[in-house]
Image (tube, rainbow, N blue to C red):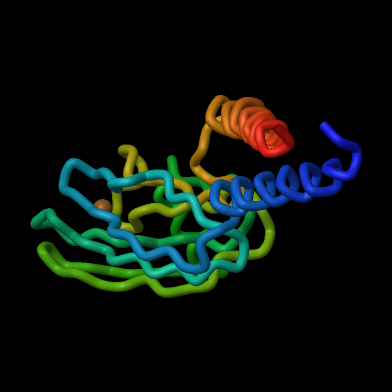
Length: 177
Ligand SMILES: [Cu+2]
């Protein structure tokens, strides 16, 4: 390879890196998804991943016959006393919430809010007596990470980029002949 081609190869490589990382790692600007509340005292899903500062729209669907709530507390990494209804009620009365949707059986509501900027976990529970105490709870995870696991990221950065660099190098060599 001629030395004069070096800036071109570098530019192509950098462009490849930027394109791949922006498509894989850059956050979406808004999240809109369903959360289903059921009489088996479950939230589906019970883990919701959002980006810091993201506009979140959750369609809360009570698919059961019993009343349920989607009550999302605003305190980061808080130890919400969900095991004890009296303590949970006291906590609920004295702490800020990002969402507090109460639904009769079969009803649908919306929780619209801006995700906190602070990364961490934020607990949500059902505030009907006995429900959080028997497992009706979940977490919203605020993170800049996508749902991609480490292996996927390693494959993207460790395989795709070197392959792209080699491909560009080979194309340039062929053109020199
Ligand atoms: Cu419930």
